[in-house]
Image (cartoon, rainbow, N blue to C red):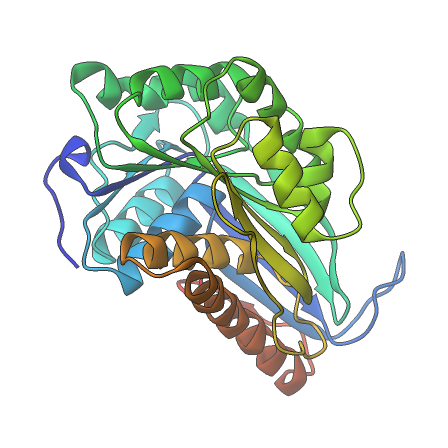
Length: 315
């Protein structure tokens, strides 16, 4: 992997959330009010940061990050971690008087139970995270976190007219805002990554499977759509070719974990840039997501008492 001195010179530029995750994985099913044994991990997180870390790990391409952190020790540690992993961090905004954002999730063997995201710093930063884009033209691959506020998304796309756009939907609750981008005609050359619930929120309808969802997203105005559905069929649709599909191997208990979707998208983007055909790209992405879920399952089956482990863990 190479590092550029300026984020505008990077091959890949990730825009969006960067914060600390605290993930509690219970060994049993979570019931309201229950006190369960399990494992608690603290690790770097946020969609944009997860994508940047994953791509810097598997690709020789230079990766930059545009995000906002607080001017606190947590923010300094997050930037230092990114720099150590080879990510160009000069574009990260340090927002004075704000605490670095955080995310808390509770998982059990059936997957995610609930999560709370404190994104006050990202919201306060607004379009200021795009400042580096105002001083030049970026023509590489721009990977955009769909959690960004609508005005930030629109401004980013205006600045990135010459870039290759990859949009990553980050939650069903916020995915519907991406529908406004297609209405504005901004995404005919963009690739969208979403799960089945996010695709339904964007299109305003439910789907029986990922194939139907991917086709509907392309029909709505996205140039390419890659849709996942947990342990079921994943689909990759684009105009002018057949929809590619691939089913993941059986998942073990606790497989649907925080960060697996981001790892899937990062691996798929890398595979496409490496010239993989649609089916092989899906296979590479599914394998990468599977590594995350396997690690989570291994951790959940070997720990019987809560622990707090600070620092970097597998992202």
